[in-house]
Amino acid sequence: MEKIRVLFVDEDNGLSSQMAEAWLNHLGQGDFVGSSAGFEAGQLSPLAVAAMREVGLDVSAQPTKSVFDLYTRGELFAYVITLCDPASAERCPIFPGVTRMTNWPFPDPTREDLSEQEKMDRVREIRDQLRDRIERFIQTNRPETQG
Image 1 (cartoon, one colour):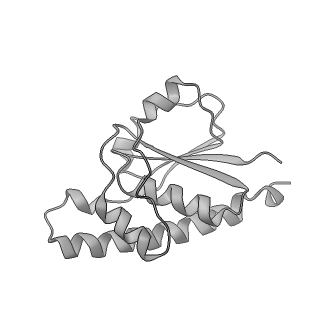
Image 2 (cartoon, helix red, strand yellow):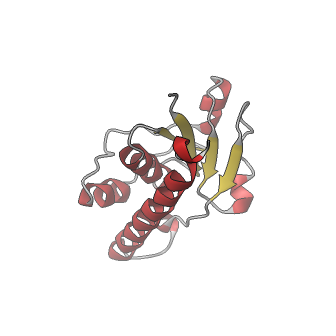
């Protein structure tokens, strides 16, 4: 059976999209392939690396990618999920063959005027919220539920 390809997109592929990709690949039990990208390829957030390491997932070697590079290479995804505010999500290109596109808005605490501890606490909250959201996504979209 062909795996369901899912692309997670945020501003710079440094935080929420990387965590979402890791969760889907970890929890999807081989039925899904998660990828991630940003409107720009930025830097992987050390807070994302630390937060995911706390739950046993290592994202430290993940490169950041541009969604437009994936688009121009002609990559196809069954789902494109933007993880930024709805206005920013509108910048995402329409991929050929995409069956569903949706927005799960998550803030980026690394861009806020917070202490490092407050940023880390918020990143942990986002990590846990993403896990819950992805678990529901998997339950709803697992191949045997689509028959």
